[in-house]
Image (cartoon, rainbow, N blue to C red; front, side, top):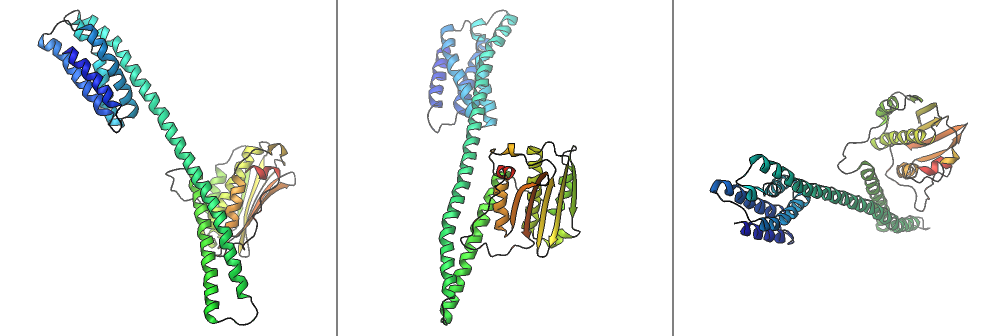
Amino acid sequence: MDTAAAFLALAMMIVAFVPRVPPAWPAAAAGAISVAITVAHPLAGWHGGTVPWVLVEVPPLLVLTLMAARRAPVPQAVVSAGLAGSAVALMLVRALWPGDLAFAAGACAGWSLLAIAAAGAGLYARMLDNGRRRAVAEAKRAQRLTLARDLHDFVAHDVSGILVQAQAAQLVPGPLPPQVTDALRRIEEAGQRALAAMDRTVQMLHEAEEAGPGTAEPLPGVDGLEQLVDGYSPSVRVDLAVDPGLERGLSQETSATVYRVVTEALTNVRRHAPEAISVAVTVTRVGESVRVRVDDDGGGHSEAAGRGGFGLVGLTERVEVLGGSLSAGPESGGWRVEALLPTHPSRRLRRPGARVSRPTSDRGALR
């Protein structure tokens, strides 16, 4: 029986390396049969197991334990690796039965360290595999975002050209047939909708990238500023001033962007102005726009230049998609981040060919 168990363990190890074979069942089958044969020795009165065949059976069982712990789904891994590991731990019963029970128990306990080591190696390899899968998934997400941005730039350039031609055609001297005028108008509207759709898509990809997989909670708006300020660093005094009732007069996109601007500005104060002792956050309505201004007294911090990042640069793109503007730079011994946003963004985007400004001063270049 020991010979059959050894050959079975070898066969199951070979089967486990076959592609598309679930790694759990070869380990479970070899382990269950090996444990059954081991238990049969005292129950059936078998004496003196063949030690060489026992030593032949152990390495395949250890390999199966490792493979099950590494590759099998968690519930199956617990059962299959447990059976194969238990078979290894109990293997010495075949050689030591009958004999001193305490000595046999101690020998099995020591022998079980081999199974524990194999299972530990499998779990460590499983952890590395999961880390690699997460890294690959993250790289794919980043690549998809980059491709989406590139596609936006390339397609937007061509669509903008179509818009320019359609707009120019409407300005040709002399009357145009009504059908032509209507067609040009519809071409212009379709192009504007296409550009708006592309901008929204890239923006959503940006937000998904920043939030991470599985995050679906909406970004807070102006009504969340008080909680944001209250949770800021206790060593810095933050004064918040918001026009009463301002939240009710803003679109959801504008309100969320106001919150994003303040969050980014406060984050940059914490990162790049550690000596700042006060910050003033002001959100006011100016006609059909809302102005967001964040001032700190932490100095200009030219030493912060050169640390790359997407914060203010990506935020500038978000603000300008809504038809607003954002600036950042030194102001009166400190630093100012200021954004002007429409209360209700128009469906019309910035004119074709308009260039997106970037923060050019030191701390602005960081984000």
